[in-house]
Length: 327
Image (cartoon, rainbow, N blue to C red; front, side):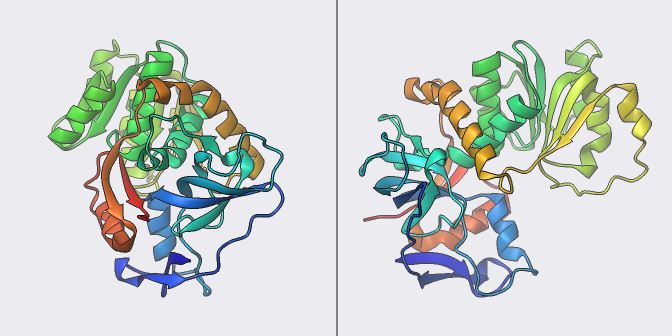
C-alpha cells in the first residue's frame, strides 16, 4: 500500500511517498480502508523532530474510512461501516488500524472528508473545555486561535452545549467573520485590539471563567489579566514560546486560578477511549442535525500531501486541512 513518511527530519521537502506493508489488526482493533485524514500541527512537529531516528514512521493521527476487518467485541463495527477516529500507527496511508474503542460511526449526512475533520480537533477541544476546563452553562470562555481546527471546534461546542459567552482571537477579517458565524460573541483582532482590555470591558472587569491557550509564553500577561477569580486556564500549545520571564506564582494564587497543561496524543488508550465514548454521546448528535459542523479549509489529494503541510505551516487555514485518497 502507499504511505507517506520522511527521508529524514526536516522541512516539507523531506516528505516521501513509499510502499509499506498493509498493517494487520490485533485483538481489540479494527482495520480501516482510509478514505480521508486530517493534517495536524503535531505531524509538522514530528516531521521536524531531529531526535527521530530511522526507520521513520508513517505520519498522521486521525482517519475516516470504511471498516474492513473487526477484531474486537464491538458488534456495531461490521465490515463496510463508515467510521472516523484517532489512530496510533499512522494515518497517512491507504489502510490503518485503530483501537475499536476509538471508532466513531459517522452520521449518514457526513462525508468522509467531514468525518476526518472531527477526531483530533473536536476531541482535543472537548477534553479541554469540559474535562479540564469544566465549562458550565452560561459561563464565559476566551479561545485563542479561534479560526484553527481546535478553535472552530471549541467555539461551536461552547455555544451549542453550554450557551457560553465566547471571546475568540485572530488577526484576519475572514477568520474573525467565520468565528462570529460559528458562535463567537466577541471576535477580537489581536493586532488591532488589546485582548485583555476588551475582555474586561465586556465582563464588568471580572474576566472569563475559562481560557483555552494555544499561544503560551507571549500571552501569559494578557491571559492573567483576562482570568476571572477561580477561573480555569488550560494550556494546549506554545506557539508563542514556552518560557515566561519573571513568572510570579503569587499572581496565580491571588486569583485562585486553576492552571492546567495538556496534550492528547500521548494519553493512554483507555483515556482516549473514554473521551471518545463521552464525545460520541454528547456531541455527535449535533453533527447529525447540522447544529455543529466539521469546518474544512481545503481538501487536498493524497498525491499532493506536501502541499497540505505547507498550508498548515503558512497558517492560512480556517478549520481543517483534509487529505483524501481517491479510488
